[in-house]
Amino acid sequence: MTKKSVITSTQLSEYVLEAIDEVKGKEVLSIDLREIQNSVSDFFIICHGSSDTHVEAIARSVEKHLDLEIGENPMNKEGTDKADWILLDYFNVVVHIFKEEARRFYNLEKLWADADVKEIEHTF
Image 1 (cartoon, rainbow, N blue to C red):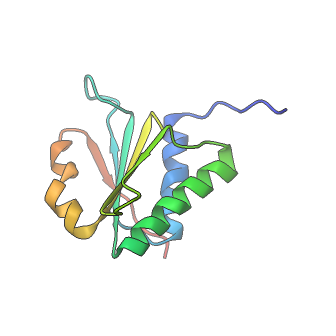
Image 2: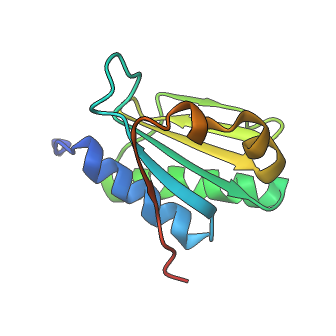
Image 3: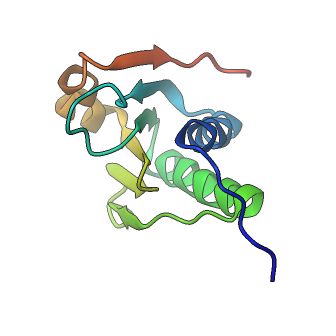
C-alpha cells in the first residue's frame, strides 16, 4: 500500500481546473476564499455547461481526473439527479457546476465578490 501524498488546496484547485478545461466548461472562475473570515472552504470553482449532458460530463471529468491523478474523491456530491447544479465537495475545494440558467439565478460570484475572483482562460 502506497502512502497518499499531501496536496495543497491550491494544487487541488489546479487539478479541478484542468479537468473542467478538458471538457470545455464555460466561464470558469476560481474564487480564493482563504482571506475571507469564516469561509467554508479555501476555494470555490464555478463553471457552467450548455446542457444537462454537458454539466454531467464536467462533473465526471473532475471526479475521474482527481481520482486518477491524485487519488482524491469528493467527500460529498449533490445535484447529480437533476444536473441543474452539481456540487462536488473536496473539503478545501468546492466545485459548483451549473447549467447556465441556474448559474445566472443563484449568482454565487456576486455572493463572494469580496474574495479574490479569477476568470480562468481556456486552452481550447
